[in-house]
Image (cartoon, rainbow, N blue to C red; front, side, top):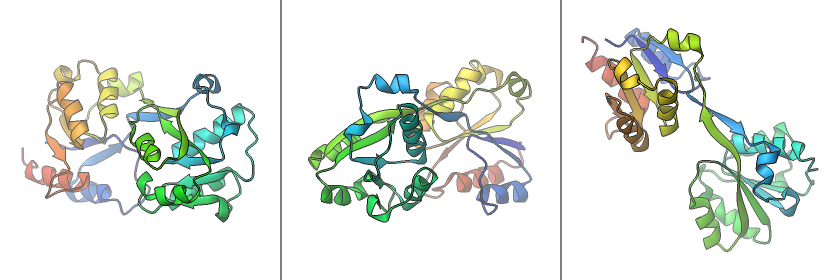
Length: 252
């Protein structure tokens, strides 16, 4: 019977999160602990890409991580950010986050509504004379490059941060007493196997839940027993699928 669940994400900031409803209604303990963390590249590592920040007139931000690491690298490289530098962001929330580092000037900040870079393209095309720099994670595909190439924009992609395993302390390993683990990315599965190489054998009774086909495949390849896969047509969210699973398996 599942009574204690480890969710590999940060604790929700909203008290209205469906996770808290599940904990209360079904009397289960939920522990939130990310299995992965984001780490910025050092200035030395960044220099190896032969990208010079002053060469660009506009920066494209796809996440807050990109913003944090751009400004951190700018500081380390002693790059004085010009006032006329333009910022293109995939959402308004990300655009507003820029205020953490520089004064927000509406005529210098542009954003999309969907969170997808394709939604930003019309705006970028209007500023086709800009030289765009696109900071990315070490794990990325060529979708952004392909889209910008198709619009004949002047752009360069560069890696500014990477996803690494958020390792467990010896104490956490010793006190590992969960009935179920919930994963949202293949990186989370990789982190689990790094911290517990014999997990499929030593913890074979622990239920595994995954969100997304890539995460499910990673779990299977690692030899884990997969008990819950989301999303499904009936349960498009992990919380919906998890609640249904717990109700159905509550009397085991």
